[in-house]
Picture 1 (cartoon, rainbow, N blue to C red):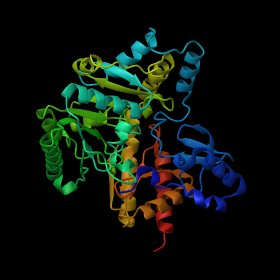
Picture 2 (cartoon, rainbow, N blue to C red):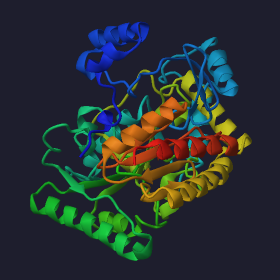
Picture 3 (tube, rainbow, N blue to C red):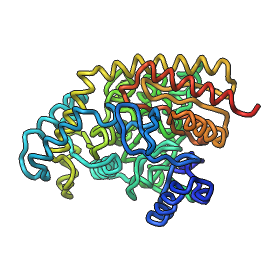
Picture 4 (tube, helix red, strand yellow):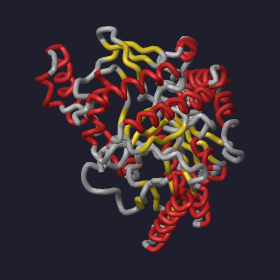
Length: 436
Protein backbone atom coordinates (compact mmCIF):
# COMPACT_ATOMS: atom_id res chain seq x y z
CA UNK A 1 0.00 0.00 0.00
CA UNK A 2 1.27 3.47 -0.90
CA UNK A 3 1.84 5.83 2.01
CA UNK A 4 -0.25 8.95 1.44
CA UNK A 5 2.60 11.47 1.71
CA UNK A 6 4.73 9.44 -0.70
CA UNK A 7 2.24 9.79 -3.55
CA UNK A 8 3.92 12.12 -6.03
CA UNK A 9 6.43 13.29 -3.42
CA UNK A 10 9.55 15.16 -4.53
CA UNK A 11 12.78 13.20 -4.21
CA UNK A 12 15.02 15.55 -2.23
CA UNK A 13 18.12 13.84 -3.65
CA UNK A 14 17.13 15.28 -7.04
CA UNK A 15 17.63 18.87 -5.85
CA UNK A 16 20.93 19.11 -7.74
CA UNK A 17 19.04 18.94 -11.03
CA UNK A 18 16.92 22.00 -10.26
CA UNK A 19 17.66 25.60 -11.19
CA UNK A 20 20.08 27.12 -8.69
CA UNK A 21 17.65 29.40 -6.74
CA UNK A 22 15.05 26.61 -6.44
CA UNK A 23 17.67 24.02 -5.48
CA UNK A 24 19.01 26.33 -2.77
CA UNK A 25 15.53 26.79 -1.30
CA UNK A 26 14.86 23.03 -1.37
CA UNK A 27 18.17 22.34 0.44
CA UNK A 28 17.42 25.06 2.97
CA UNK A 29 14.00 23.53 3.66
CA UNK A 30 15.42 20.00 3.96
CA UNK A 31 17.99 21.24 6.47
CA UNK A 32 15.35 22.97 8.56
CA UNK A 33 12.57 20.35 8.43
CA UNK A 34 14.57 17.16 8.00
CA UNK A 35 12.94 13.88 7.01
CA UNK A 36 9.49 15.26 7.84
CA UNK A 37 9.72 17.67 4.88
CA UNK A 38 7.52 16.66 1.94
CA UNK A 39 7.23 18.57 -1.33
CA UNK A 40 5.11 17.70 -4.37
CA UNK A 41 6.12 17.24 -8.00
CA UNK A 42 9.36 16.37 -9.76
CA UNK A 43 9.98 20.10 -9.90
CA UNK A 44 8.64 21.73 -6.71
CA UNK A 45 6.50 24.81 -6.95
CA UNK A 46 6.72 28.08 -5.02
CA UNK A 47 3.48 30.05 -4.75
CA UNK A 48 3.36 33.63 -3.52
CA UNK A 49 -0.27 34.59 -4.09
CA UNK A 50 -3.65 33.11 -4.99
CA UNK A 51 -7.18 34.05 -5.98
CA UNK A 52 -10.22 31.87 -6.57
CA UNK A 53 -9.08 28.66 -8.26
CA UNK A 54 -5.70 30.06 -9.29
CA UNK A 55 -2.28 29.89 -7.65
CA UNK A 56 0.54 32.16 -8.88
CA UNK A 57 4.17 31.15 -8.70
CA UNK A 58 7.16 33.36 -7.97
CA UNK A 59 7.29 34.43 -11.63
CA UNK A 60 3.59 35.29 -11.72
CA UNK A 61 2.63 32.20 -13.74
CA UNK A 62 -0.91 30.99 -12.99
CA UNK A 63 -1.70 27.37 -12.11
CA UNK A 64 -5.24 25.99 -12.00
CA UNK A 65 -5.83 24.49 -8.56
CA UNK A 66 -7.94 21.35 -8.87
CA UNK A 67 -6.42 19.80 -5.78
CA UNK A 68 -7.15 21.82 -2.65
CA UNK A 69 -10.30 21.39 -0.57
CA UNK A 70 -8.93 23.70 2.14
CA UNK A 71 -9.93 26.97 0.38
CA UNK A 72 -13.38 25.55 -0.31
CA UNK A 73 -14.91 28.88 -1.41
CA UNK A 74 -11.78 29.88 -3.31
CA UNK A 75 -8.34 31.14 -2.36
CA UNK A 76 -8.31 34.52 -0.59
CA UNK A 77 -12.05 35.06 -0.95
CA UNK A 78 -12.61 38.76 -0.20
CA UNK A 79 -15.57 38.08 2.13
CA UNK A 80 -13.48 35.73 4.23
CA UNK A 81 -10.43 37.99 4.22
CA UNK A 82 -12.55 40.97 5.28
CA UNK A 83 -14.26 39.01 8.07
CA UNK A 84 -10.90 37.84 9.43
CA UNK A 85 -9.34 41.30 9.24
CA UNK A 86 -12.31 43.00 10.89
CA UNK A 87 -12.47 40.57 13.81
CA UNK A 88 -8.71 40.42 14.37
CA UNK A 89 -8.71 44.22 14.54
CA UNK A 90 -11.38 44.13 17.27
CA UNK A 91 -10.71 41.22 19.64
CA UNK A 92 -9.61 37.60 19.44
CA UNK A 93 -9.52 35.66 22.69
CA UNK A 94 -10.22 32.07 23.71
CA UNK A 95 -13.79 30.90 24.11
CA UNK A 96 -13.91 30.88 27.90
CA UNK A 97 -15.13 34.41 27.43
CA UNK A 98 -18.53 35.16 25.92
CA UNK A 99 -18.79 36.49 22.38
CA UNK A 100 -21.97 36.53 20.25
CA UNK A 101 -20.27 35.41 17.02
CA UNK A 102 -19.17 32.12 18.57
CA UNK A 103 -22.74 31.31 19.60
CA UNK A 104 -24.18 32.35 16.25
CA UNK A 105 -21.69 30.21 14.36
CA UNK A 106 -22.40 27.17 16.53
CA UNK A 107 -26.16 27.63 16.00
CA UNK A 108 -25.81 27.93 12.23
CA UNK A 109 -23.54 24.89 12.05
CA UNK A 110 -25.85 22.76 14.20
CA UNK A 111 -28.86 23.84 12.12
CA UNK A 112 -27.31 22.03 9.13
CA UNK A 113 -26.92 18.75 11.03
CA UNK A 114 -29.44 15.97 11.74
CA UNK A 115 -31.75 16.40 14.72
CA UNK A 116 -30.10 15.21 17.90
CA UNK A 117 -26.60 16.41 17.03
CA UNK A 118 -27.22 19.53 19.05
CA UNK A 119 -23.88 20.26 20.69
CA UNK A 120 -20.47 21.11 19.27
CA UNK A 121 -16.89 21.25 20.51
CA UNK A 122 -14.49 23.36 18.48
CA UNK A 123 -10.98 22.31 17.49
CA UNK A 124 -8.30 23.72 15.19
CA UNK A 125 -7.85 20.78 12.80
CA UNK A 126 -9.50 17.65 11.49
CA UNK A 127 -6.86 15.62 13.32
CA UNK A 128 -7.92 17.16 16.62
CA UNK A 129 -11.57 16.58 15.73
CA UNK A 130 -11.06 12.88 15.05
CA UNK A 131 -8.88 12.51 18.14
CA UNK A 132 -11.65 13.96 20.30
CA UNK A 133 -14.28 11.84 18.54
CA UNK A 134 -12.38 8.67 19.44
CA UNK A 135 -12.20 9.78 23.06
CA UNK A 136 -15.95 10.48 23.09
CA UNK A 137 -16.74 7.08 21.60
CA UNK A 138 -14.48 5.19 23.96
CA UNK A 139 -15.87 6.90 27.05
CA UNK A 140 -19.50 6.51 25.97
CA UNK A 141 -19.32 2.84 24.98
CA UNK A 142 -16.67 1.59 27.40
CA UNK A 143 -15.07 -0.22 24.47
CA UNK A 144 -11.67 0.24 22.85
CA UNK A 145 -11.96 -1.18 19.33
CA UNK A 146 -12.21 0.96 16.19
CA UNK A 147 -13.07 -0.13 12.64
CA UNK A 148 -11.52 1.69 9.66
CA UNK A 149 -11.06 1.07 5.95
CA UNK A 150 -7.79 -0.25 4.57
CA UNK A 151 -6.35 2.97 3.11
CA UNK A 152 -8.07 5.42 5.44
CA UNK A 153 -6.47 8.64 6.62
CA UNK A 154 -7.97 10.42 9.63
CA UNK A 155 -5.15 12.71 10.78
CA UNK A 156 -1.80 12.87 12.50
CA UNK A 157 -2.12 12.77 16.29
CA UNK A 158 -0.96 9.52 17.89
CA UNK A 159 -4.55 8.30 18.28
CA UNK A 160 -5.66 9.04 14.74
CA UNK A 161 -2.43 7.92 13.09
CA UNK A 162 -3.22 4.58 14.72
CA UNK A 163 -6.50 4.46 12.75
CA UNK A 164 -4.91 5.71 9.50
CA UNK A 165 -3.50 2.60 7.78
CA UNK A 166 -2.27 4.61 4.80
CA UNK A 167 0.11 6.53 7.09
CA UNK A 168 2.18 3.46 7.98
CA UNK A 169 5.46 3.06 6.10
CA UNK A 170 6.24 -0.06 8.12
CA UNK A 171 4.22 -2.19 10.46
CA UNK A 172 0.46 -1.96 10.83
CA UNK A 173 -2.22 -0.35 13.00
CA UNK A 174 -2.23 -1.47 16.65
CA UNK A 175 -4.27 -4.30 18.15
CA UNK A 176 -7.40 -2.27 18.92
CA UNK A 177 -7.87 -1.33 15.24
CA UNK A 178 -9.67 -3.55 12.73
CA UNK A 179 -9.00 -2.78 9.08
CA UNK A 180 -11.63 -3.70 6.48
CA UNK A 181 -11.68 -3.36 2.68
CA UNK A 182 -13.00 -0.17 1.18
CA UNK A 183 -16.31 -0.52 -0.69
CA UNK A 184 -15.06 -1.06 -4.23
CA UNK A 185 -18.35 -0.93 -6.07
CA UNK A 186 -19.06 -2.54 -9.42
CA UNK A 187 -21.91 -0.57 -11.05
CA UNK A 188 -23.43 -3.89 -12.07
CA UNK A 189 -23.55 -5.19 -8.50
CA UNK A 190 -24.42 -2.35 -6.13
CA UNK A 191 -26.43 -4.55 -3.78
CA UNK A 192 -23.62 -7.10 -3.52
CA UNK A 193 -21.12 -4.35 -2.67
CA UNK A 194 -23.37 -2.88 0.02
CA UNK A 195 -23.87 -6.32 1.56
CA UNK A 196 -20.15 -7.10 1.38
CA UNK A 197 -19.20 -3.90 3.21
CA UNK A 198 -21.74 -4.63 5.95
CA UNK A 199 -20.38 -8.18 6.30
CA UNK A 200 -16.83 -6.84 6.71
CA UNK A 201 -18.04 -4.45 9.42
CA UNK A 202 -19.87 -7.27 11.22
CA UNK A 203 -16.82 -9.54 11.06
CA UNK A 204 -14.71 -6.78 12.60
CA UNK A 205 -17.28 -6.23 15.36
CA UNK A 206 -17.36 -9.95 16.12
CA UNK A 207 -13.58 -10.17 16.26
CA UNK A 208 -13.27 -7.16 18.58
CA UNK A 209 -15.85 -8.72 20.89
CA UNK A 210 -14.04 -12.08 20.84
CA UNK A 211 -10.80 -10.42 21.95
CA UNK A 212 -12.52 -8.54 24.76
CA UNK A 213 -11.80 -5.10 23.29
CA UNK A 214 -15.35 -4.45 22.22
CA UNK A 215 -16.29 -2.06 19.42
CA UNK A 216 -16.37 1.64 20.23
CA UNK A 217 -16.83 3.02 16.72
CA UNK A 218 -16.81 2.67 12.99
CA UNK A 219 -15.20 5.79 11.51
CA UNK A 220 -15.27 6.52 7.79
CA UNK A 221 -14.50 9.45 5.57
CA UNK A 222 -17.89 9.36 3.85
CA UNK A 223 -16.47 9.67 0.34
CA UNK A 224 -13.62 7.23 1.10
CA UNK A 225 -11.16 9.73 -0.32
CA UNK A 226 -7.85 8.10 0.63
CA UNK A 227 -9.21 4.68 -0.29
CA UNK A 228 -9.68 5.89 -3.87
CA UNK A 229 -12.92 7.95 -3.80
CA UNK A 230 -16.09 5.85 -3.54
CA UNK A 231 -19.32 7.83 -3.40
CA UNK A 232 -21.70 5.21 -4.77
CA UNK A 233 -24.14 3.70 -4.46
CA UNK A 234 -26.20 6.11 -2.36
CA UNK A 235 -27.20 4.23 0.79
CA UNK A 236 -23.93 2.32 0.87
CA UNK A 237 -23.52 2.76 4.63
CA UNK A 238 -27.05 2.00 5.86
CA UNK A 239 -26.66 -1.70 6.68
CA UNK A 240 -23.15 -1.27 8.08
CA UNK A 241 -24.20 1.56 10.41
CA UNK A 242 -27.22 -0.45 11.55
CA UNK A 243 -24.90 -3.30 12.57
CA UNK A 244 -22.64 -0.87 14.42
CA UNK A 245 -25.57 0.48 16.41
CA UNK A 246 -26.90 -2.98 17.20
CA UNK A 247 -23.46 -3.76 18.65
CA UNK A 248 -23.72 -0.76 20.98
CA UNK A 249 -21.03 1.14 19.09
CA UNK A 250 -21.06 4.59 17.48
CA UNK A 251 -20.77 5.76 13.89
CA UNK A 252 -18.32 8.63 13.37
CA UNK A 253 -18.70 10.47 10.05
CA UNK A 254 -15.41 12.13 9.11
CA UNK A 255 -16.57 15.09 6.98
CA UNK A 256 -13.21 16.84 6.62
CA UNK A 257 -13.10 15.88 2.94
CA UNK A 258 -16.73 15.53 1.74
CA UNK A 259 -18.42 18.10 3.98
CA UNK A 260 -19.46 21.70 3.32
CA UNK A 261 -21.28 21.02 0.05
CA UNK A 262 -18.52 19.28 -1.84
CA UNK A 263 -20.63 16.40 -3.14
CA UNK A 264 -23.08 18.88 -4.65
CA UNK A 265 -26.24 17.16 -3.49
CA UNK A 266 -26.12 17.81 0.24
CA UNK A 267 -24.03 19.69 2.75
CA UNK A 268 -22.61 16.46 4.22
CA UNK A 269 -21.22 13.32 2.64
CA UNK A 270 -23.13 11.07 5.04
CA UNK A 271 -26.44 12.50 3.78
CA UNK A 272 -25.84 10.78 0.45
CA UNK A 273 -26.10 7.48 2.28
CA UNK A 274 -29.16 8.23 4.39
CA UNK A 275 -27.48 7.58 7.73
CA UNK A 276 -27.50 9.57 10.95
CA UNK A 277 -24.05 9.70 12.58
CA UNK A 278 -23.56 9.75 16.32
CA UNK A 279 -20.56 12.03 15.88
CA UNK A 280 -19.60 14.28 12.95
CA UNK A 281 -16.05 15.58 12.62
CA UNK A 282 -15.05 18.61 10.57
CA UNK A 283 -11.90 20.45 9.63
CA UNK A 284 -10.14 22.07 6.67
CA UNK A 285 -12.96 23.61 4.61
CA UNK A 286 -14.56 25.34 7.61
CA UNK A 287 -12.10 28.22 7.62
CA UNK A 288 -11.09 28.43 3.96
CA UNK A 289 -7.44 28.30 4.99
CA UNK A 290 -7.77 29.45 8.59
CA UNK A 291 -7.25 26.48 10.95
CA UNK A 292 -10.71 25.40 12.12
CA UNK A 293 -12.30 22.12 13.13
CA UNK A 294 -15.30 20.88 15.09
CA UNK A 295 -16.97 17.83 16.58
CA UNK A 296 -20.78 17.69 16.65
CA UNK A 297 -22.56 15.09 18.74
CA UNK A 298 -25.47 14.31 21.06
CA UNK A 299 -25.59 15.75 24.59
CA UNK A 300 -25.54 12.29 26.21
CA UNK A 301 -22.28 11.43 24.45
CA UNK A 302 -20.64 14.74 25.35
CA UNK A 303 -21.95 14.55 28.93
CA UNK A 304 -20.45 11.08 29.45
CA UNK A 305 -17.06 12.35 28.34
CA UNK A 306 -17.18 15.62 30.29
CA UNK A 307 -18.09 13.81 33.51
CA UNK A 308 -14.69 12.12 33.40
CA UNK A 309 -12.26 14.56 31.81
CA UNK A 310 -12.20 18.21 30.85
CA UNK A 311 -11.73 19.58 27.34
CA UNK A 312 -10.46 23.01 26.36
CA UNK A 313 -8.70 24.22 23.23
CA UNK A 314 -7.11 27.67 23.44
CA UNK A 315 -7.14 28.51 19.74
CA UNK A 316 -10.45 26.84 18.83
CA UNK A 317 -13.78 28.62 18.68
CA UNK A 318 -12.32 32.10 18.95
CA UNK A 319 -14.19 35.18 17.71
CA UNK A 320 -11.94 35.27 14.63
CA UNK A 321 -12.65 31.62 13.86
CA UNK A 322 -16.38 32.26 14.25
CA UNK A 323 -16.30 35.33 12.00
CA UNK A 324 -14.40 33.41 9.32
CA UNK A 325 -16.66 30.37 9.65
CA UNK A 326 -19.76 32.52 9.28
CA UNK A 327 -18.33 34.18 6.18
CA UNK A 328 -17.63 30.76 4.63
CA UNK A 329 -21.22 29.62 5.26
CA UNK A 330 -22.54 32.89 3.81
CA UNK A 331 -20.45 32.53 0.65
CA UNK A 332 -21.48 28.89 0.14
CA UNK A 333 -25.13 29.90 0.39
CA UNK A 334 -25.13 33.26 -1.39
CA UNK A 335 -22.90 32.19 -4.28
CA UNK A 336 -24.73 28.90 -4.75
CA UNK A 337 -21.52 26.88 -4.41
CA UNK A 338 -23.20 23.59 -3.55
CA UNK A 339 -25.30 23.83 -6.71
CA UNK A 340 -22.17 24.82 -8.60
CA UNK A 341 -20.38 21.72 -7.30
CA UNK A 342 -23.24 19.59 -8.54
CA UNK A 343 -23.49 21.19 -12.00
CA UNK A 344 -19.79 21.68 -12.76
CA UNK A 345 -18.95 18.34 -11.17
CA UNK A 346 -21.40 16.62 -13.53
CA UNK A 347 -19.84 18.39 -16.54
CA UNK A 348 -16.36 17.49 -15.39
CA UNK A 349 -17.28 13.84 -14.84
CA UNK A 350 -18.88 13.68 -18.30
CA UNK A 351 -15.75 15.14 -19.88
CA UNK A 352 -13.54 12.67 -18.02
CA UNK A 353 -15.70 9.79 -19.23
CA UNK A 354 -15.34 11.09 -22.79
CA UNK A 355 -11.56 10.87 -22.28
CA UNK A 356 -11.98 7.34 -20.97
CA UNK A 357 -13.48 6.23 -24.27
CA UNK A 358 -10.36 7.28 -26.15
CA UNK A 359 -7.76 6.45 -23.49
CA UNK A 360 -7.94 2.85 -22.24
CA UNK A 361 -5.49 3.71 -19.43
CA UNK A 362 -8.54 5.14 -17.62
CA UNK A 363 -10.34 2.28 -15.91
CA UNK A 364 -13.01 4.23 -14.08
CA UNK A 365 -14.33 7.72 -13.34
CA UNK A 366 -16.23 8.06 -10.08
CA UNK A 367 -17.14 10.41 -7.25
CA UNK A 368 -19.74 13.07 -6.58
CA UNK A 369 -19.90 16.81 -7.13
CA UNK A 370 -16.45 18.35 -7.15
CA UNK A 371 -14.72 15.31 -5.67
CA UNK A 372 -13.82 12.95 -8.49
CA UNK A 373 -11.43 10.06 -8.91
CA UNK A 374 -9.94 8.78 -12.15
CA UNK A 375 -8.67 5.24 -11.68
CA UNK A 376 -5.76 4.14 -13.84
CA UNK A 377 -3.99 0.80 -14.18
CA UNK A 378 -2.53 -0.44 -10.90
CA UNK A 379 0.65 1.60 -11.27
CA UNK A 380 1.40 4.54 -8.99
CA UNK A 381 4.31 5.52 -11.24
CA UNK A 382 1.85 6.08 -14.09
CA UNK A 383 -0.29 8.30 -11.88
CA UNK A 384 2.80 10.29 -10.88
CA UNK A 385 3.77 10.77 -14.54
CA UNK A 386 0.31 12.08 -15.33
CA UNK A 387 0.24 14.39 -12.32
CA UNK A 388 3.63 15.82 -13.28
CA UNK A 389 2.50 16.12 -16.90
CA UNK A 390 -0.47 18.17 -15.73
CA UNK A 391 1.82 20.26 -13.56
CA UNK A 392 3.85 21.12 -16.67
CA UNK A 393 0.54 22.20 -18.25
CA UNK A 394 -0.16 24.31 -15.15
CA UNK A 395 -2.96 22.20 -13.71
CA UNK A 396 -2.67 20.76 -10.19
CA UNK A 397 -4.30 17.53 -8.99
CA UNK A 398 -3.38 14.80 -6.49
CA UNK A 399 -3.40 11.03 -6.07
CA UNK A 400 -5.21 8.57 -3.82
CA UNK A 401 -6.04 4.91 -3.41
CA UNK A 402 -4.48 1.83 -1.86
CA UNK A 403 -2.19 1.47 -4.88
CA UNK A 404 -1.73 5.19 -5.49
CA UNK A 405 -3.31 4.79 -8.92
CA UNK A 406 -6.30 7.12 -8.62
CA UNK A 407 -6.07 10.71 -9.82
CA UNK A 408 -7.74 12.87 -7.17
CA UNK A 409 -9.62 15.92 -8.45
CA UNK A 410 -10.83 18.19 -5.64
CA UNK A 411 -10.92 21.88 -6.62
CA UNK A 412 -12.40 24.80 -4.71
CA UNK A 413 -16.19 24.86 -4.94
CA UNK A 414 -16.12 27.94 -7.18
CA UNK A 415 -14.57 25.87 -9.99
CA UNK A 416 -16.16 26.90 -13.28
CA UNK A 417 -17.21 24.98 -16.38
CA UNK A 418 -14.44 26.77 -18.31
CA UNK A 419 -11.87 25.67 -15.74
CA UNK A 420 -13.22 22.12 -15.87
CA UNK A 421 -12.68 22.17 -19.63
CA UNK A 422 -9.13 23.44 -19.10
CA UNK A 423 -8.45 20.46 -16.84
CA UNK A 424 -9.98 17.96 -19.29
CA UNK A 425 -7.97 19.38 -22.19
CA UNK A 426 -4.72 19.27 -20.19
CA UNK A 427 -5.40 15.69 -19.06
CA UNK A 428 -6.13 14.61 -22.63
CA UNK A 429 -2.87 16.17 -23.82
CA UNK A 430 -0.95 14.51 -20.99
CA UNK A 431 -2.41 11.09 -21.72
CA UNK A 432 -1.70 11.47 -25.44
CA UNK A 433 1.92 12.40 -24.71
CA UNK A 434 2.62 9.23 -22.72
CA UNK A 435 4.87 6.66 -24.39
CA UNK A 436 2.94 3.98 -26.25
